[in-house]
Each structure stands twice: as C-alpha cells, then as structure tokens.
Length: 248
Image (tube, rainbow, N blue to C red; front, side, top):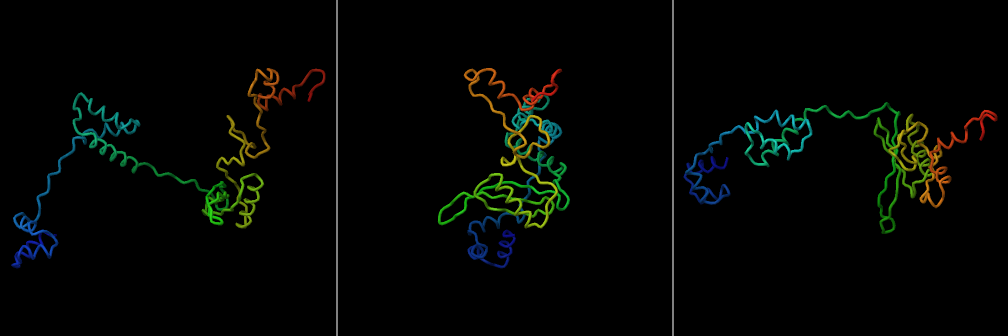
C-alpha cells in the first residue's frame, strides 16, 4: 500500500522529501521504491522434502516414538536419508501431531441427572485477617449437573466439621443429592486397599492393623498376631471345633 502511495505522489509532482514526510519514511527509501516495481515478485513455493515421509511419520506418531528417535530413523533411511535441519523436522512432526489431535474424538464430560451427584472436597487459602495472612480451610460442594457450587470456611478438617459443613450446604440448597462423591478425601478414607470393597469408605468401618517396628525385640508370636490382616485374625478367632462348635 505504501509503495503505490509513493508512486502516486510522485506522479502528482511531489518531491522525494515531501513524499517521505507524508508517508513516514526516509527519502532514500522513497528513491529506492521509485526504481522498483510496485508489486514485489512472490517467491516460488517449493514442496518440502518431508512430504514424502508423511505416512512414515504418522505411523511413528501412532507408535509413540520420541521425536529425536524419528529424526534418527529419517537420517538412517537407506533409500533416501533426510539431510535437512532438525528444527525443520521438529516443526513438521509438531504439525502432524496437531492434525492428529484435531481429528481425534472429543472428550465426553461425565454428566448426571439434576440433583443426582454432588462432589465434595477440601481446599485451603491464605486470607488477610487483622493485617496478617493466615491459612484457612474451606469445604467446597458442587452439583455435577447445574455446576452450582457452595463453600463453607472452617479452621480444621476433622470428621465432625466435615459433616456439619455438608449439612449446612445441603440445607442452603433445599434438597439432598442422591450420590455424594469424595475425591480421595483423607477425612473420609483411612487408606487404599489392594482390592477395594464396598462399605469401607467411612471411618470406623476398618481399623488400621498395627505393625511391629522391631519384630525380633517383641517376639515372633506377638508380631505375627499384630501384623496379620484383620480378616485373618477374625477367621482364627471364629474357627469351629468338633466338640464345642464356634469358639470366641
């Protein structure tokens, strides 16, 4: 646009200095533009040498091969080894990755029915109280369908505080959701089992077995009795006999 303007002003009889002040450039630039064509010739678009490797690179991406290894394979190709730069190859691979991700199926969000699910989780933040920053915890509850959220600020994260805060939030909503979901909350779970079973989520349903720190000092019998799983100890206590039947 500026090149055509410079030539138009020159045809009107303006001096180079005047044209430079009107366009906002140096007078030497005006003199150079007047000797050049208005439209610069476009560079010829050359086909990339990597286009013939598109199928191979796509297969490497599907196999989750690292990009550096792809470059090594391309340079070790016995038929036509790649001789270009590494940055050019990396950009080509990144473009193919973006095309593959754009064509992938979208992620489906987990949805529920109205009033079906509510998710609870603890959070913490530093708030300014009395001129100093103190740490406060809060309980957040969010309905999965409507995305309605509510929080209650507290000073501790024990079980009684959790129950009271949940009841306050549910009372404010005016209804009780059908399913309550907890994201591995330590207040709710005692730990993870190798084979999780229903009914072991709330505290009190499972006791943590005590383990010996020094088995040799305590004794083999005491260590085996305290470190055995609760289910094995229960079976030993409730083993039937032929004469007395079930014994405690």
